[in-house]
Length: 364
Image (cartoon, rainbow, N blue to C red; front, side, top):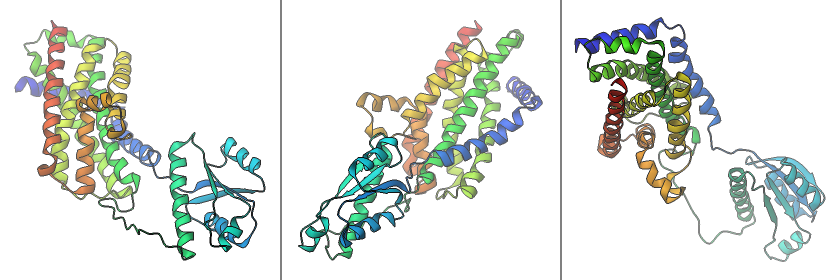
């Protein structure tokens, strides 16, 4: 324990002597939260709309007004011809184009359902899909005002995130990304830097066992990870106002096995790299990006091909994202999240074992 403590103290002193470490510890997590918290959102508001009214009757103007006055759409233009409407969609100025054909008012006056055309810009699939959904809502409201009630009335109830605000489930996931980036990168860079400047050889001639050296190197960066969580949590709770319905202690305890995985990956990266530049590139492109894509943070896992769904079981971030959203939004604890905790512990054991084996071979 004395050897581990000595290495730990040495690492902490080296960290604190670095003038760049304070901004990294306290400023970088907050900046990442602000950038990703506002940028990484799937909420689509005020879809750009263009209208072409070829009927010019009271009924067509009523329908057009329902769209243009809706909070779902932002009207960019009203044109008199279909070619003009097509040009607006082609140029990207309009994402949804509404065409009310001639004869629409006559059909409505005769009691027949009028037909309209909606064009969606499929080059932006998310906005186009949302625009079509909003258009369906507007048409339903128009039908209800006209006395045309639907055969089935749907009354949905949304649990845990009643307003379906994407920030509430994206921002907690950003915590997982911040912890992974900081702990993995700092660990990998610090160990590779030891080899570059030659101090690793000095440590090898001391009576320190490889396990003691590994623990003494990893524990300081585990403390750094906890500092990152403590710095980012107030921003999540008080600035973005994401509800924390579970216990803070549960969140901290379930963060530890995830940090074991990221620290182990940082150690593994250091054994595969000879320079800090190599370590940075390897960590970013081989370990971080796949975890972002396969964790379910951005893309739903159930929508992925089967082979990628199977690959996600080896991604630590997959389980920690479930933990974060469960603790923050659902208020659940160990009784529900124990499978994710066990999976993280198993992955941490495997990653640390492989990293330790490679580290021993590197020392040899």
